[in-house]
Length: 363
View (cartoon, rainbow, N blue to C red):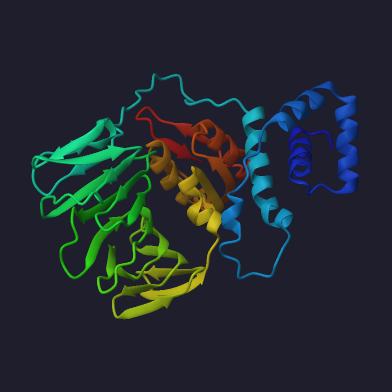
């Protein structure tokens, strides 16, 4: 029982509070007798394990009541494994002796007005100018709710990998756009409806306006909104998810429509043409707003998409069987990619390497 893997497993369980009494005693003896084990334990136990957004855990709870400790335990254990992996393994970007060309990717939030040149919002300092009108940009937010009459037409804002951006629409609604997300919208809502189009992921807080419904157009579906807050995930256009926090939402897809209640997630599956509701884990669905990425039993092939959105690195799976291995973890957005990759290797046994074109491969 002296293998490194077994000892690391005991350390993880001890940090998560799930270790048995017998294993706890065994680990204490190893720490006492073995200087190397003691050194690794001291380094690991001194690290900070990030907490999940606890305030959101209680937002959705259709399951039998559990203690807060039991709710947090799976995330704590996953975080402990990630920290352990970072402490033990050395990250090696390249597994070959060939020089690797790192491809630079532009990483700016871009506004494309209906007419006129594109505007780099990442480089904007206070104000931008569209058709001779001034629009404030501050604290990573585009402010359209200033009462200023702006040009007509449909504009597009695009958020790159690793970024997020807020848009305060002219009616007072606020849309928080996640990485690799685009939104089409007018500067002013002048008609009988307020309509935007989203592709990617966003959190929408809609200002109530009687008699002027708010509509969000998604790939293959539409959401009709009253005053409400909800999260939209359409990264996979064939599997669109809408998670309702408060208020009322009606989701329509094809000939089907469903009225949602707070705490429900509507899921439209294009392959089966099904539109269903289910409870959702708020930590997983909403954590990105607080800079947390939550993986809950996520297949490695889906993790590849997150890696691109987060780091701008293309990731592929060499072995289909490896792509179906499932990964659970909770990471801060500022965590280096090496931390994530070591955690995946530690918990799923999936190794990785980079090729000369900077593509990440899981094998």
